[in-house]
Image 1: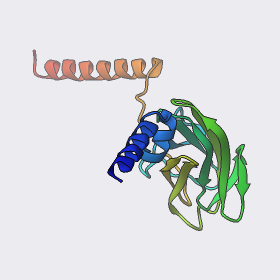
Image 2: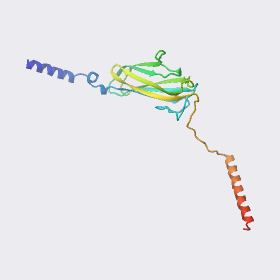
Image 3: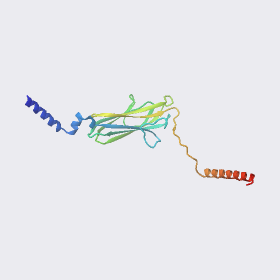
Image 4: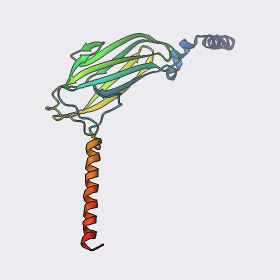
Length: 205
């Protein structure tokens, strides 16, 4: 019996060591297969995307266009198959641009990717128009999720503010320049110089 047990154990060890890396990773190494998702947001007139937009930067109003960016990447060493990307939208959005399948009941967009090789990525863009911000002002959060048949998945969010008076709250005061400023400065100098001369004359200097 001991001999048979040793033979079985030896067979199992050699079978395990001789198995392809992808098979070993599938059964024992969850950390070796991973997929990441990155969700960002911006106003349509902004130059780049942000992780979140706080109320001190911008507050959207009804009719404003808002855009979301979703990037999915295979960050592991093996191929990922049957990837599903889900963008769960907050209320108060009227979709204008997207290339996935929209589920109106669950208010989400779904994309499906057959395969992602290691370091390969895919990006998606969603554009929408703000509505009902005057009725329900406050912070809104957009949730993005990704899963595959051989990965534990990932999740990311992007938040923004909307209200009755949408406005960019961060304002910069631009100093006046040009000929008007030059002539104004000269006039001020002439006035000051004349006052000094008059004062000296009155004192007999």
